[in-house]
Length: 330
Image (cartoon, rainbow, N blue to C red; front, side):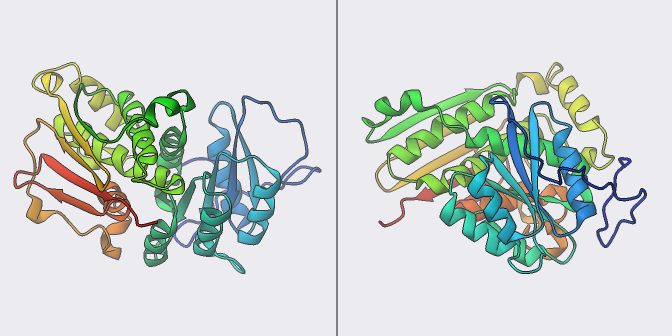
């Protein structure tokens, strides 16, 4: 655990609350063009500080804060924020209402939820209303930086290809990927652009589509081809990353590939993602929307996939998932 802590129901503060400097929590100072600004929203000053310090550990990141949803919208109106990290239970405008307002007024700004025990139902509603991802407060120190990085990668738009994409009417292609996670955001961005240009995805839904695709692709690489268990993350260290790096260099894992078949037309996009791992018992797959399972690391990816896609089904052996996103009626 860090030397910082927050006053959630399952943690006891270990240090005195640090107070903002004389300029306040959002000091007015020049912002470097290279800085990435993230808005942290929480009515608890201790929780807000904890999340802020976690983000500020990342090179090139700057944090602004708000104590509730209404203040957050004011900050978004004056700051160019790349993402919002918000608590769900707040007085006045809560996290769900904030997600809905951001989706309406700032549709290109992704929202990451901080969830606690007892907030599972509202978290699911927030994901359905436009939030991009979520992190359990119990795992905030371990998972927030990685989740933020993945959400921001999925949100990037390469505008140089837009002219060419205007000419596409249908698409049928297959990608075969090595177990290199760095390739995933590149492929996701590529597919997002086709989806938007073919009007299979509205611009404000582009990010959530990307999150679902990234989760499915990384699941196939990590849990399928490399057979990495989510339990390796539980110690809060880097065991998951170290085991993954070793397996990418050793047999039989190193030779396995991820097969991604994509078919898009005017009606729908279908993604079939198949790994070369041993698969798993699909019948034993827990329901990620069950409150008992939502805060478990093993169910997070599947919850996001099922929430953001119209269909998500596995084959009988568990080494292939088929995702469908249908065109919305205008």
